[in-house]
Length: 271
Image (cartoon, rainbow, N blue to C red):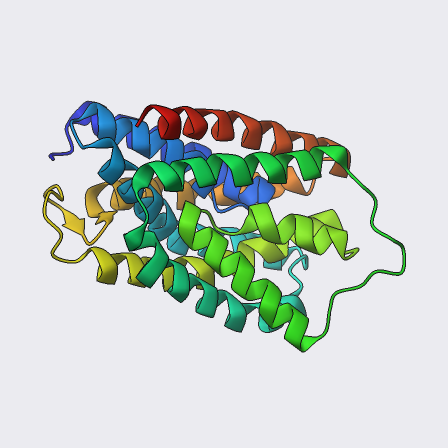
């Protein structure tokens, strides 16, 4: 599958949009990329099942690059809780390995699409309700953080997102300030993306039916274009995030998630 000019333009626009959202919401942009890459690949003749899997894998691989750009900007503002990153990261790597090396390869693309839709819709509802955590609630101990990291890494591996759709609500539920949660989620995106990307390459290597330019389930030409554009735009999203009221930020997050969940539900039901 060659990168003709129209395809390159589509991917570049997608990269700019997801880079901005990565910085704004700490979600790595994956939840926006998966539906759009699924549509782009399906429109160019890939079977729906394979298109969903390649969209998830390619989306996750771009987050390796986007997260670096985003977290540098958040760190410069002193917003990243590195103590949280340190405790969640080991579990995240474990959960990502379980998902990308095993469960991902076994599940049909339609089931991955349906799971994406339902879980993202649930996350959006939790964010939109804006339930206040108990004032005395704090982050769990080391064992609880490892367990939470494992869940975040595993779910991210199944849907191709950077984990912000789980880690941001988790941290705010534990009374971490919203802006700190978004910044810390951006930092967590790197270990999530790296561990899962390696797993997608390994589990998809040598599969029949993959297009030219694929490394396992990752479509390298799309990765190159989206990653370049998103890295340039992520700092702009970070600046916007720190200038936006918390309630408005949560509404933007939830509205985006509902739209993406609806599209992937449609893909899963019609596959």
